[in-house]
Image (cartoon, rainbow, N blue to C red; front, side, top):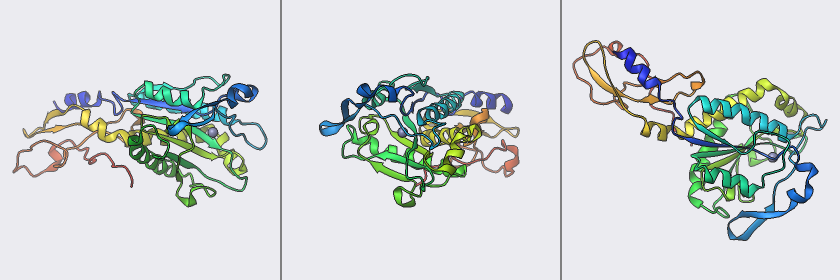
Length: 304
Ligand SMILES: [Zn+2]
């Protein structure tokens, strides 16, 4: 009985019903199309305009371009999010095109009514500087200032997860916070859905470049990014998940819902029977061992 009910619970993937826009920054042919890339496009409220896109960074030895790196991490993330049940909308799936412009990048997430949008980049910072940082929007030029707060929450989740895989916060921007808010990025200003950028390392720094070149490291980054998406959407996923009534072997009944698993990349799901998370339980039965053993508590709240 419990086993079959738990199978039903497990069928609800943590990101089921959600849409995530994954935006791989720049594009492989941007550099050979300067006229298209340099033209001015709308980039924020109040008539703010900016170049359509840029070519992006590259490593000092020229072997790895940012456009290539961004797409590779984006594809790895796409696969993980899809496995968790999300509908994933990609800005691009090849690296031989031009653009799209920053306003179109924002429009893609807006049209998809994405629950979250993530723009993936690597920086071209000072060669002596290392580390990642996350960028969230500011209200100044945002066409929908209401996204600023949830975007910042998402950015904090991203920072926590990237640190969690051992990446260091940027040494050259953000004063050690690993997070900055900017009003000069069209992709953020024009977003009507919560959105953040990640700069996963500094391509001009030799040590960071070695890290960014490793596919195992990109995999790990994609895992961290997916975990941040799950964490940021956890509350919503929990709210919309159907409660499942379970009855244990001594007849106590309680309701459970699928908890968002932080490491749910293999389809693991957890259910809680703590007082806080479950429906009424019969009193007078003491042993918690009679209940399903997976007491993991509520989903982790966003880090402040
Ligand atoms: Zn970039």
